[in-house]
Image 1 (spheres, helix red, strand yellow):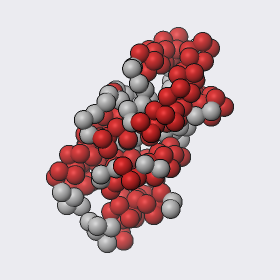
Image 2: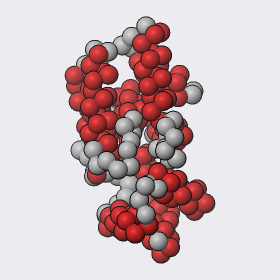
Image 3: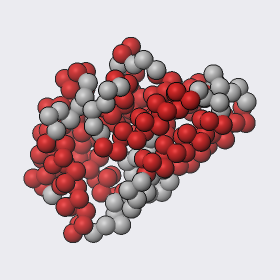
Image 4: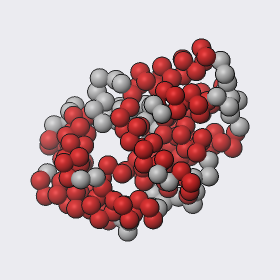
Length: 205
C-alpha cells in the first residue's frame, strides 16, 4: 500500500469526502517534499511504516500510530527547536476538524511530542513509534552513512564548527542510554548495530 492510500484509509472512518481527503494528503505530500528535506521526507515515512507493519500485531491503536507517523515531522525546520510542538499542534487542529475523538487526538499529540526526546514511554504504542523512527540507526553501515550525509545536508545552514559539536552531543546521548530501542523486537533487531554505527560516526566526526 502506498502512502497516499494508507493515509486516506486512516481517514476513511472520519470522512469519505474526497475533496477533504485530497487536501489533507496534498498538505502532507507538500510538506515532506520540501527542497531542504533530504532525510525527513516521504521515504522516511515509508520506512517507518515498513518497520511498524512487522509489529502490527503488538500495536493497540494502529490508526492512531499511523496519524502520528504522518504528522510527526510535518513541520521541520533545521533552525527550530519547536518542530515537534508545531507538528503536534497542526495534527491536533486537523484531526479536531475531522471529529476524531479527543482521547485519540491526545494520544497522537503525545506520541508526536515523544519523538523530541525519545524517552521510554508508559504507552507501548509510543515505544514502537519511537523505535521505528530510530530504526535507521541500526541498519547496515552503508545505509547508515547515507543517512548521516542526508542529515548533514538538512543542517547545511550550520558550518562544521557548529554542526559537529551538536551532532556529537546527540550521538553520545544515544550511547549513554541503557537501551537505544525501547521494545524487545527493535532491541533484538537493531541495538547492537546501532551502537557500532554511532561509534563509527563519532570516530569520524
